[in-house]
Length: 193
Image 1 (cartoon, rainbow, N blue to C red):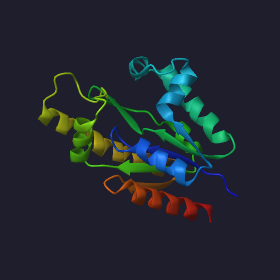
Image 2 (tube, rainbow, N blue to C red):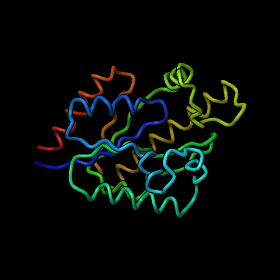
Image 3 (cartoon, rainbow, N blue to C red):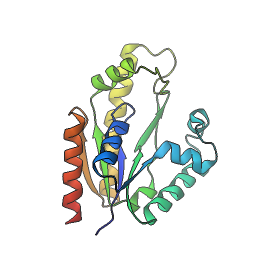
């Protein structure tokens, strides 16, 4: 049977974690890799999101991220890697996927609207600092930052698919999780034919 490696991207608040839990339950043969956690472990800074954010625009960290992706795609088994195509730290947007993404069989985008992301951030019971916006950003500035980020994110997803010749699928994060899961599993079956 064909082994598949998927790179799942979506902006913060798109519902990647929820979808990954659903995939793990429905298709337990998939190894689910939370990209940020895996990368912090790879760098020897487990759980330190502040240290990870400070590494943005760091060539050595970028190289190590690409190494980690290559290691993941070269090992046996089915994998869904939870990552990003672009990252944002306090309004500063920068690429993250890089050439290591070329080893995946397909890439996925969990597409979501600005309004839904803003609602989810507001409703976050843990009130996590997702570090998306500059301190003191007004609601209008937050909306503008997210609108711009989402547009750039989708463009980067398309650039990765085209540039690396990867199969790709956009999943609608506005749908119920069960429907998103159904769409993913149908895509997976199609690629395994």
